Amino acid sequence: EADIYQTPRYLVIGTGKKITLECSQTMGHDKMYWYQQDPGMELHLIHYSYGVNSTEKGDLSSESTVSRIRTEHFPLTLESARPSHTSQYLCASSDYRQASLFGYTFGSGTRLTVV
Amino acid sequence: KNQVEQSPQSLIILEGKNCTLQCNYTVSPFSNLRWYKQDTGRGPVSLTIMTFSENTKSNGRYTATLDADTKQSSLHITASQLSDSASYICVVSDRGSTLGRLYFGRGTQLTVWP
Image 1 (cartoon, rainbow over the protein chains, first blue to last red):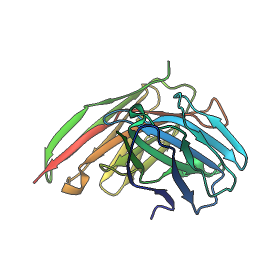
Image 2 (tube, chains in turn brown, yellow; image 1 turned 45 degrees about the vertical axis):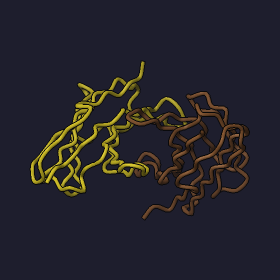
Image 3 (cartoon, rainbow over the protein chains, first blue to last red; image 1 turned 90 degrees about the vertical axis):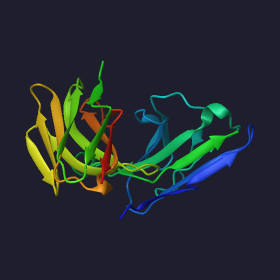
């Protein structure tokens, strides 16, 4: 029933490559987020957006960048991937008015491996 | 420091048995507490959301409790099924910003054996 989609689900790339992780939601949510999660560890916020043309860095320092040109689309880009970027990346969205009631909707994640 | 601590870190139970997962938090000012279920390789899925005034909330075989005075929550799973095997994450939101900052626990990894 999730209306937030992430692609690709799995990605293995070489060091130095540029990659973009896609995230799209069809719920019209104004807020979108990117989280990074390592096995057995908590989620860490790396980027968020309040709406179109609004992006902010999260708590965890990240070498990635994001853009929000359309409400439904919030891609994350790594200009030069390194093995330290190996992780799971989760995209989420929420409605400003309903976040406290219905929580956040998460995508299925992208498992990134940099070799 | 705002933190969310979950216990146990991992738990193995037999199918059909009940179990209770714990969450202690120090987040202040408190807004709400959520329990999520995360299957391996998937994103978290919301089970329950509880505000300050709510003590208990159920979602099928899942029952969450909240004691805002002691800053503790529990998630009780009744008559466990194999499909309950997953990580259960406690997430607390504060009221200190428009963003509604989320604080995540590391999760309890539940394994249900047949």
